[in-house]
Length: 388
Image (cartoon, rainbow, N blue to C red):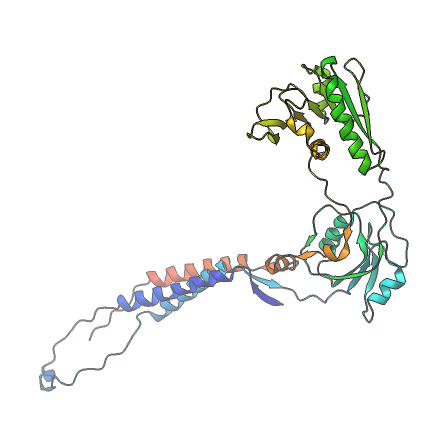
């Protein structure tokens, strides 16, 4: 059994122990002076010695004990049962050769497991489940946090969520040669369909959109497909981005955007939203406006160099692509050296290690109640007066 305090600052209340001592010193029983004739022969220079004397010492002791227990209750005492340390775990991530992992960690009597769903033993086949690596690390930390953990990972990791894992317990992070394969369930990258529907007077805008798409494909060949048609041509279901170059936006297009679509709309009257393009005077040329589950790249006028001067800038294709793509997607792959999990503060770690601890609050409260009753009984008893 180990004794610990969850709130040690509560012991500062022990300073209140001086209060009953001062009260008992101040409220001493007043003495009645009785004149004796023989006292006249005693010289005035001989004075009786004085000593500190507490009246009703038992009451004082009870009150001091009561205040001490109250201070201890504020400190939140607990009893922690001493447990036998569990056998260390060594967890190997997929992509690491078994012999390489065993060579990286030697001289340790530990249980070996795969870093996959269910954490199967190393001599078995890893679970085929597609659980991200970051989620597995957090699950391992929650389930085996009280065990010494060593994680062996390859040089390149997959299955990330864009954030370095923050774990409640420290782990031994070992990096060995290797590379995690991409998720087997991940769909192959499909071409991005960019549909453009235009009114006759907006046909001049197609020149700039075609040039932008050509610039995109120069960097990523055949990644983007431009489908430019008049307004009366239906929009394919697999369209990812839409440019509607017309004075009015029909309800079916607005409904498509609200369901999660991304569209560039000209002649839009939006006055709210994030300004992403502006001219030299600071006037807004384009805004990002949320619409239902989707978003709109809203232009107040037509898509022409007169209304949107940045059409003639060399970086217009990149700026248009960034606007249509939206916020950057968190990477799912990273070098293992830069992804070593961070260990949270010692306070949080200590809270995780309190499993099985027993609080003493109830027992202290009962003892305080008993002492308070004793104090009241002693305090209300008539006290014997002394005279001198």
